[in-house]
Structure formats: C-alpha cells, structure tokens
Image (cartoon, rainbow, N blue to C red):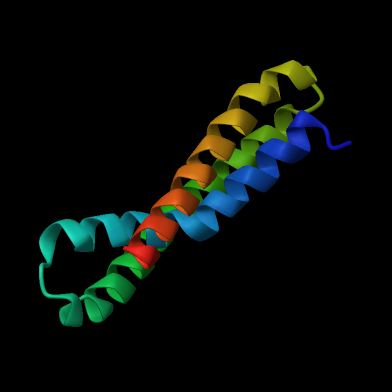
Length: 100
C-alpha cells in the first residue's frame, strides 16, 4: 500500500504532466471554431502552461517532502484526493474531446 504522501506526490506529478495540455485544450476549444487551426496554438499554449504549472507543482512537492516528517499521513490525504480528482477530470475531458 502506498502512503498518502506517496499518493499526493504521484497524483500531483501526473497532473503537472497532463494538466497543462488539458488546460490548453480547453482554452483552444473555447477560442477556435475551425478544427484545422488548433494544433500550433495548442502546442504553444501547452508549453507556456507547462513552464508555469510544472515548477509550481515541483515547489509544492518540495514543501511536502520537507513537511513529511512533521505532518501525519492524514494531512496528505486532502492533496492526494484533490489531485486525483483533477487527474480524473483531465482524463474525462481528453476522452470527451477525442470521441466527440
């Protein structure tokens, strides 16, 4: 069994990898109606968001790493559940946009 600390780190890193393209996809879908023009803005926006989102998640995980001995495992449950829900939302949106 994984501890809540390990789950929080894993789910947040998974969101750092998949969250930027998902947010970029949402923004591009809201702004562009022509499906042939979405790839270049999608890639550029994904890179920009990843340059912001990934360092923030890494800073947060560094904070978690240094607090892991001071905090109980129960305190890591909320971030783990939060990032798991974000990952599920990202997955559902990717499936929706891929199949729609």
